[in-house]
Amino acid sequence: MAVLVPGALAAVMALLFNFTDLVDLMSLRSLLAYSLVTFSVLVLRYQPAQNRSKKEKTEEETEMEPEVEGGPLESEPEAGISGILKSLWFPTSTIPTQKSGQIVYGCASLLVLLLTILSLILAWWSSQVFSGDPVLTTVAVLLLLLITGVTVIIWRQPQDPTALPFRVGDLMCPKCPP
Image (cartoon, rainbow, N blue to C red):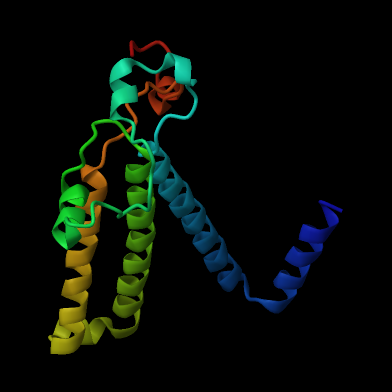
């Protein structure tokens, strides 16, 4: 069944579509797969280490751990919007926490949405954007500014410092020193 169902689907698609359309579909599939891997690596890099037990944590890490986690943007009630923005730009911890992981996940999802909207605008109305239409040019510039701001917020969050057992460089040069 694992061979027959995809084979039948491929045969039906070959009957319905032109060869060039199928090649374009394959290119889009590859781009989507690479984008999904990139998104996953980005989100996982900023998650707290989960492969260590509680006994292996140092005292410093235990002190820096929050007692109870709320939502990704929750802070003291008196801090308000300025406190939220300050925690996004200047995280309090140097190691990833559940809160910083949620911030990166939310920002990465927002980044995907903003990039999709910008891509659609540039695909449908590129001539109007580049010819100087004030509305579309303003929207494109605002989207670029938001994308830059969200990227900086992700960049400012603490990354997981644990050494990874596998690196791409090991495949390229197995005899090279680390």
